[in-house]
Image (cartoon, rainbow over all chains, first blue to last red):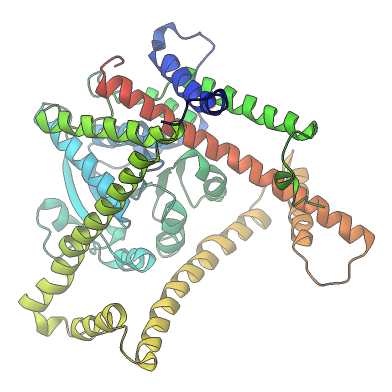
Length: 288
Length: 214
């Protein structure tokens, strides 16, 4: 610990203060948070798109979940992904889960394990669940999966059903992409969507991918997209999940506190720059 | 609860490890470098071990070893592929002329997949959706014109070496500021993602570890 003098303490105060503020804000019960403070998006267009897509699936649909989230962003979309899986399961979907990234595989394994634990304690279970596992080769692996996605050793009714449907991604009724920074929804659209243009695709993605993925939703290459925290929370609120199974979602108050702190930080930096109290090294590299 | 750990002894152990690791990483903000560095090494070690295990269990054994052992006659390409992998991966002492074509093949194939997908899956459909299938009523036409103007101005900002008059120079400066504005907006999205991650970690400590929130 080096925080022994006032200068050090002044340097350390902001990050520690931020953590304390977030902790206090997180402790505030959701029911006691101000009425106007809602994290769920008021615009339900995308939520309705996703719900309608799931509701419009045929009976016992085969859904492929491309689970390529990454550790750095998964907490943001975790409750949305779980709500979507619940939604699919409650519609009788038969799920197959595949990953093209190692991180995605680790998270997919954890979620499959969670679903198995829930089934063991009497929770709602998928009609059928096939763990396809990790497919190597990145984009080349995706292209190969278009024609052959089931491992030769895979057994069971789901594996047989996919083989009967051609053995590739074309055997599914819907592809749901759990997107991360690497090999996310864009790669799926480029590699799989261009080869199977009639395959419906939906994506759940962290907020920073929203600018990248929104054009695909507008062009119809994605049928549904939940790509901001607020949309995810709104969707998770809409899906009927029993209280015990509901994931602890991120609440509005700590997010608001964090955003306000970020704005104050930004304003302070702007004032420092305007008043010339910022070092010469930071002032180099003007745009003109 | 984040639901990633079971409610048994193993889950409790995992929660404690996760909580202590989180606090150890955060100790960096109070100037504690040793713990942070230790956690970095731990992460690197775990990631390496995990990747090796993943490669062996989910790629090499089921997709290479088992087909070669059980049915070699139906997988004639596996042996040359294995030889190519050995040349690529392990033989730094092999002549450059032998390795280079294979490396070129792998890099070229990867680039072809990425580039081909980008053109067929993004550029052409997005151009089509922007130019052809668009209803230009209401605010759509002004938006489309604005998007075109901003794209051109930003492209001008990237021009190098051409004849530059006063107008082109000012347009380039404007283009760079527009670029900064766009990057700033994207950083705003990134901030929300990272803040959500921090809030979730605080929630993990207070909820899963200390049991103060449900």
